[in-house]
Length: 265
Image (cartoon, rainbow, N blue to C red):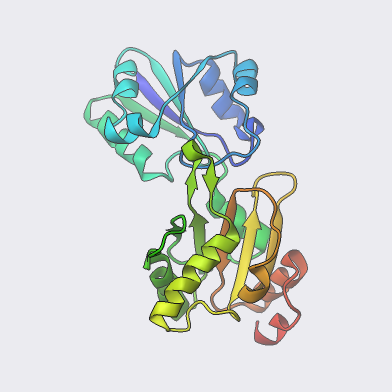
């Protein structure tokens, strides 16, 4: 039996892969890459192929989810396979399922971790990592938006915790939810639920292009962020819970939040 090595690509481009991850690619018999679980704005498959001297075979959502990664599992029966994944390789539950299947078949698995949006938003915002609660994904806008993100924010707020909202990405359709669209979706749910969880005066942190050389981080009240230009994708939103005074100061200095936060931090 061979093995599958799950390698994280990081957040923005082909230079985000670690030296360890690159070495795994160079010594693999076959290298697969999926690019649908997250958008890497400046990633170049061709550049990574040049750097690694390896041909990268793209695998689709259908192959990994509907076929349970059959192609990768069969290939790994006789050699070393690397699966390249945006961000950290096992944040997506799809890849956890593949690892479980591999282990049951007696195929060895290893992980080379990469930079994750989960840690990037913490570093960029200055919020404390131990004060984040459950994270949630906001689906692309529909007439009847999902109430789950609203409920997760409400649950975390009751405990004084921050909420990271990942915004839906459909790479195959070249569609990425913007911060303003995510906020509008939540406001629609607020209009229905009327629980004062997400209102125009709710404090929000918007983050765009985490992991790049020009990320945008802006904190403010929801009303102000609705019309703010965050630039290109990918986008994420954080709804802060109770703020430590250092967190309040960080949002003011690092994310241009209103000075009034000092009074509440």
